[in-house]
Image (cartoon, rainbow, N blue to C red; front, side, top):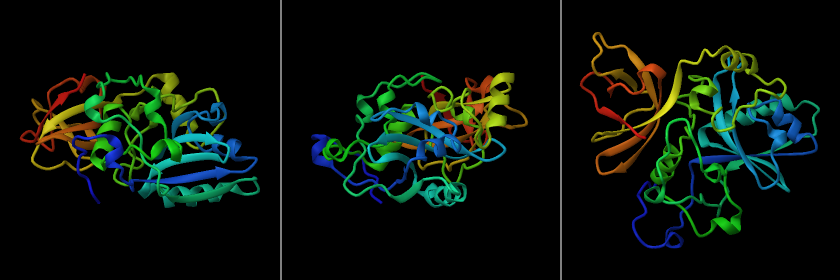
Length: 285
């Protein structure tokens, strides 16, 4: 897989196919109601041409996978990490039963490209906020997409700077959706009907029991850290983990940016990854 950065020139000169994601198309008369009962987001509020994000949960309210959702005349389309595609296809087929719903699952469609501004042209976002809703678009139309693409590393960095963390095999079932700030991204509805894991999510929201959130950091290291790498308070003695890395990407030579779920009261402390001698993290404002 080519993970090189785009350097110079126009975006049109750097078109490259993307293989990080899969697409689940959900079609049929009952498709909206079907997804409404399976996900955290208010699917029925989505208008053609609009986008939403959300998650599929376990009965314990933990995120099995998250997604970006669009609606066009052909039905709903969910963009998911490629390693979640088969798991979600199997799960959704279990619940179709007699509903008028058809599923089509595939790798990211040939010829479609991710359309976002290069990271150096983006403004870093503050904690818990996402002001550029357009950045949550799952994918543009084929016509709009053909002239723009970023490398896989640049795509990861773009999402990190927008505060959107993708759940993959390494992090499945580790977090409640609020820990990933999906409530801040309009990826959770507390007014709609029931869905798998809804009781835990609602209880956490209404009782105010959330103790961990997603934060963005940067650090210097000669090699990447693993997804799930523990974070410690640098002055901790003995050290106890206060968080873990969810996504990361290189931002420049020797520098990395990451999203990590961290205890809220410890998020602005001096943190190190892996141990007290590990890379020192800096918060991104």
